[in-house]
Length: 45
Image (tube, rainbow, N blue to C red; front, side, top):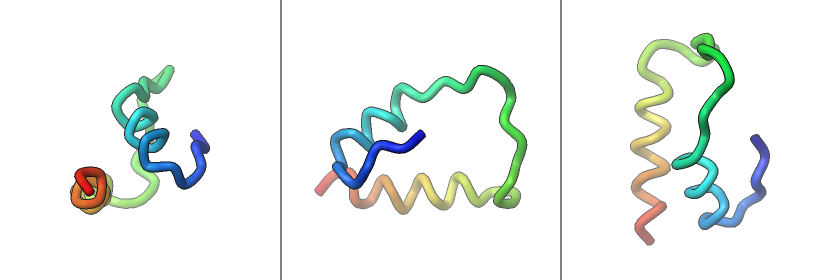
């Protein structure tokens, strides 16, 4: 899903994303959790 660089749109896309089917792990075990923690640090600014 592409939403641009607007943090409001990014936050909304993250919180409302519901994939149609199970997603395969393409970036490694645990990577998505680490990415979400990093994004979370900036979403409160």
